Image 1 (cartoon, helix red, strand yellow):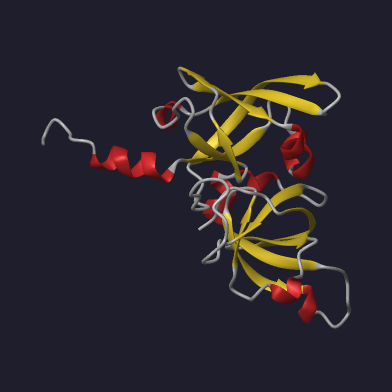
Image 2 (tube, rainbow, N blue to C red):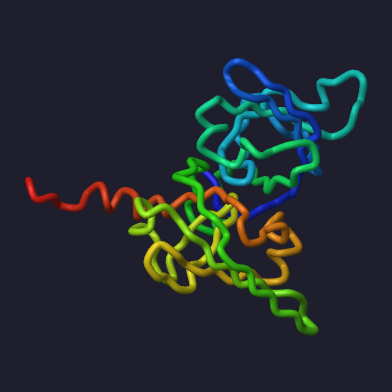
Length: 209
């Protein structure tokens, strides 16, 4: 489980194709000696498993960890677009006693959304960005004004909703501390709806009930 609070922006250092999917090497500022093999890390949304780390590399080729993504993950998320140099929002799994700063995030991407427009405002404090985002019709029902969404792994509050589009405002700190600064009109992003909305919808009475 995660909170959508990004603690590092890594970069793709290598990509390896496989019959079952792809293996990625991610350069990071994390203390990889504290990363257990098998640990879960949210990588721009999807929860991926650490399968190797630089501490185990006798050649000493930098600070990195490896993750693997199956063909399904590659086909359903922006993982398909990752190449060497791509920035990746990173969050380690929540530990008992950690501060719950964002909202409950599972690391299970529900679908792809698309940036429709970006409007920037700059002042003495820094740069703020307003993004208009379009989601698949099948997911639009789960987006609520002042509700929570995870976009590329970042916990954000919905400002307004209209049809299958909604807006979010990104403060200067979030722009500088995440890869969201790279978003532009046309950018595809990973969307995870609020987990509570998902289960409430499942419990909603149907006509048969």
